[in-house]
Image (cartoon, rainbow, N blue to C red):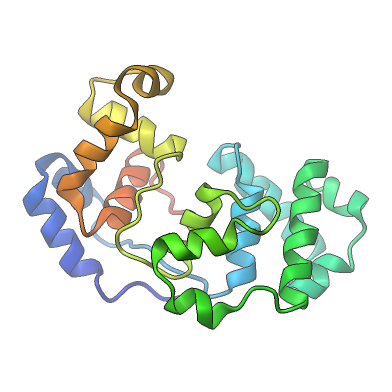
Length: 213
């Protein structure tokens, strides 16, 4: 597992640009974003985490690892759908995982191309895979490719943290209805070009245990 070389520089820049974020960063001095370096596992873990809490996603992923200790495409394809569902996955997520595994097995996902592509191009390439939406592609950009300036506007954890720390605790639904994405983008403009790092620390303000995709 590796952490980005840019992390110390990003921390200093964010703390100088945003006192609120600076306070959060100081509370977590010894942890940082890390990547497991396995593209398939990163995308599979993101699919597992779609539309459920971090705690629930961790539990489902742990059960999946119990039946599939090496979560490779081939290993997933060898499991019965009922085995995967018994891990806590919905039928649709089982279908997404299987389709993702097939893409890897058939070399439809070209990793060197993803590594060389810009953020929006990576998102376009990945969202061509069934079950991978923009949020999942953004998690891949942050956790696997470790791109420094990704702002996942559909991430409920990020929106909740912004509401808590910057908007007086407005409920997330109200934040989206009244302020909309424009307000979030405006707030986050101070964090560029380190919006991935800012997002990661805002996640920590809600849950100090870091997720590793």
